[in-house]
Length: 406
Image (cartoon, rainbow, N blue to C red; front, side):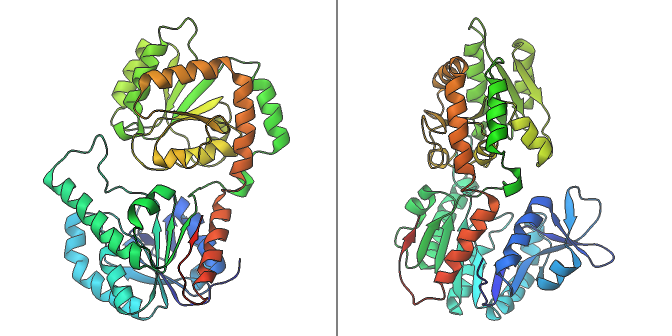
């Protein structure tokens, strides 16, 4: 990756932690992401809330070499809305100085508990810095289960309005799906691009020979499917539960595992108690234990109701496993109907049940789609995402132009 040598400020709401020895600790997946940032951003500074390390789980320490390459800009803790509001004046002072000392500012338009981009983006434009925006999800948008309270409605409309304002003025906007650009980049002045967000490392990819052996074994065994994710309404869990109730009337329903935790866990356990072909399992750590489990299934069920793009799609493809997914913007961008999986109308339990019946009877077709998904996975690894982003940053060094990269 060609280094982008400008002074680069990355603004994050996700905290970093310091232990008593002064070592920097990060969330495990965020640590993996940051290491790749450091490969092509030699003058990287990260502005993020600083916390003292206690007994937080799943943290990884930066190596001494990586810690020396990363300059930290500590922001006040933001563990709650009240704490964030109290620390906001100090955070704004720190961010103003950090933006002033940067050539390029990398931000977003959302975040919890306070969207820092609401303040950082105007700062960057006012100071005539290059603004890079990453849009990976849209948690502010109203979903089927969102209570229509005044606060939720205000957040939705405010974020949409401020988000479009920032996106249309940014020098580079990187989104994880086309629908975000369609709905938010209404009159972009800069470069817009789509780079899917995947956590799959290149070493996680199943070898083609191993995939062929795996499918040879799976085609000789009864079909089994799985849902991986939070057990909540917006992930389509109730749609799946209704589909399972319909499958219960079949002579030989396939095994279906629900793997995750969440608000609907009790409903899922009741379904498992009522239907012998259903199981509820605890999630396993992301990495080899997770991928080993994924590859045992004939297909992964992704019945999402929101417009998010679930990373489980890329995880499934990496193990030559197709998906049966709802036809939502995030899923539709990545699932080729009949090619890497099947799409069904979002929210339709009857269509999902029918899709599972068809998949049960066509394991040979699932093997073909799994092979196609594995080919796609090689183009959407976490490292490949960063290679594309590094190449896009090089365009900022060229004369200003308006273009779109897909």
